[in-house]
Image (cartoon, rainbow, N blue to C red):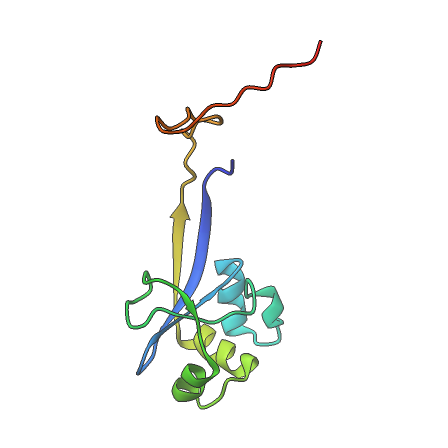
Amino acid sequence: MKGNSAQNRVHYKGKSDDFIIFVDDPEELKQWRTDKTIPLAQVVDGWKVFVTHRHGAQGHLNSASHQSLDDEFGTHDEDTVFRKILEEGELQVTEVHALSHLPSHPEPAESARQVVFPAKT
């Protein structure tokens, strides 16, 4: 099981919704903001825009529809939308802790029926 990892997202508070995209490395984003010749593929982590339905940066993530992107950005062109969110959005880095105390073979539930297949001799 993995240990701790960081989740880097950029939150853009729009007029009608909150938009989220994930980035690989905060330092790459900082460099891209000053040098737009850096390819977006080096900055973003997956080509997906998410919405939280006005629940802020920590809300439940759903894929943004073309309609919601058109309403907010005037287009659903990925390059244009990503650039706007990366330029004007707020970077948020969240530390994610893995659950390391889960047993590898949990005890069966009380109502479960245990079936044993003996080894052949």
